[in-house]
Length: 403
Ligand SMILES: Nc1ncnc2c1ncn2[C@@H]1O[C@H](COP(=O)(O)OP(=O)(O)OP(=O)(O)O)[C@@H](O)[C@H]1O
Ligand SMILES: [Mg+2]
Image 1 (cartoon, rainbow, N blue to C red):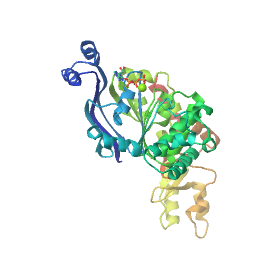
Image 2 (image 1 turned 180 degrees about the horizontal axis):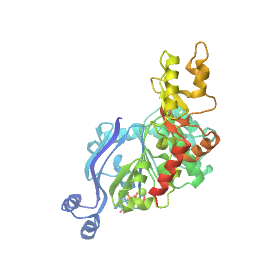
Image 3 (image 1 turned 135 degrees about the horizontal axis):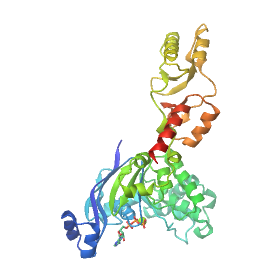
Image 4 (image 1 turned 90 degrees about the horizontal axis):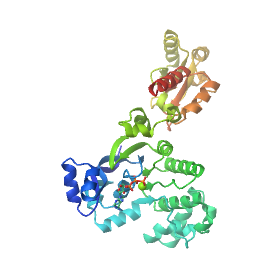
């Protein structure tokens, strides 16, 4: 996977003598000691991480832990005191102001919590504002602005003014304005935090929908666990200016690295966050890769199924894509035909489970249809199976692990 952002040894000292603070840090003094002695604040201490292209990377942590400072360091709204920030191969920390401005205009958009819309401009002109600043002609920028307003569901409001819109709609304009320049990287600092819970969920869904259509790299600051888990591919947890843990939501939930991180997850219902692919097992069901000779394939499969006292198998093509589900009976039936094909043996009504289906919905499906269900990724590639037993076993394990 290509890396969009690489951050190395990044530090931010707020105060008159960053070198002194850096030296004290090197000598083993902590953030609090440095503040007491010098009045300088270590906003970010030794951040090291990368963000993959197309990834949503969430920064989480308590108030004052350094999330905003870190995200603002990435586009140098805050000047780094020490360290490297490589974006798309370019060293942002060492970049000239001019190159930086060009990067911000073309390829790097920021969405804030306060919508920061210009009250005297229409929704359309607010959306096109970044393009106007970048010198794009009127016709082109208005066409592009309409396009993104359409994407965020605000086409019909293009000629209204911000004050005529609800908070949720204004935040959509903020998002549209960021999208208008078609940035490959978006920095979003508590972008949805000012919205009520319903509107907030709506914006998260919108962001995920847009992301599924066109993958951008997104760094997203949030102090909300549900939000972080919902939209984050990976999460970095910050404490006192440092990143203390980085991982997928699942990894962090399972192995919190310290009490601070654990405290975040107190009372979290783990099952709520598990999805089909977390549970799917790849070695529990027979997979048939069909050859030219369907008779031989089926005969062998029936024998194997009988030996292992199982009934169902999945047909998976050479490229990994799932074709269908068969059973001993359905294979026996098609073997009686003159020229059997794998298709003749497919069972109706066993739909593949999308990898991101929540455990709750999965339980519903298994209750309705208590057979092994194949789990697939977005390109219909077979990932594994979920059965009633696998599901139950998993839930019992979770219970035990969180007592
Ligand atoms: N311009 C500044 N001058 C001095 N100190 C600052 C400045 N900006 C931030 N800080 C300090 O740096 C630390 C990190 O602040 P930051 O705003 O990054 O936290 P945060 O995690 O975004 O918090 P919140 O959740 O409240 O937004 C805090 O101690 C803060 O007081
Ligand atoms: Mg902040």
